[in-house]
Image (cartoon, rainbow, N blue to C red):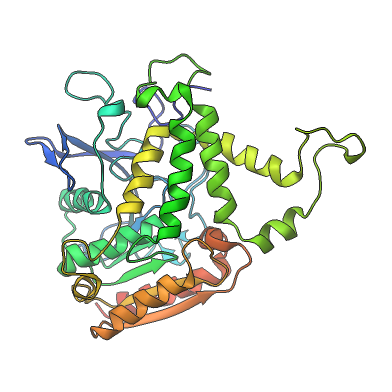
Length: 383
């Protein structure tokens, strides 16, 4: 396994497109860092209409990327993470809409992040600055300018993608006509921050992390063990107790009649699989950067508190909750709904009934698809 599973310029491009969105000046980050330049990798589906009024921005979650739809293949180790939502005749119908998905700033699939080369020709590594969700959105606004899109017909996202969507509506209220936030929140909770902290500690306590400077390590010598442990920790709370119980129960991978201390239950094998799978396609430093950005997410920061910040969100909004989500709990979506309604924002509220916990927004397409389709279609017709 390479030291980092992130995309490198020597790898196949796949369906990525690239935009240099900040080349003639440094990009100043919210928490004080500077980047010499910013490149964004993105993918598009459908055609932008003559008035550029049918554009939909899909924002990805923590370990997602720009490949929201399409098959795996050269340059894309996995199928699109929202294949069932994007395409001809699907909820985000590419016969009607121009759909864009951007690998976020700080990511590792073509956009500027810790793997990228700094001005001295070496990877940023430990020198990469702290990024916020607002920084991600600012760069996406630069990409929208590059694409000739003044207003998004809809901005849609789940989990960290929902954080971006909410920030879009707060930062650029005139550039967002409608908003869909799924299994997300206006501010990270103490429990979310606690889980994130445990996952990051797993990474940085791997000696092979080397304070973030491991990109020249030979294959097999990256911080894989710590990174995989961090992913195992996350995977437990991405799924619900009932989901894991129904799928695995107490079944074992190794024969129970000779069970040894490190023989595995099926649920342990499942965690090992997801840890290795992520380490093969993602970068540990990017994981740390984006994970911390999620902790820092607070719509009310610097805006006079949450109520004042939510007053900036004026576009029609769909808030979707998952009833079994123990990470981004229904309470948080209800607070977002109530806060928006208190300021007069038109809000629709839907609940996914799922046993799958937080990952329900990546699984329950039979329920989620019609919710998103109906909401976005209504606003498409009302243009």
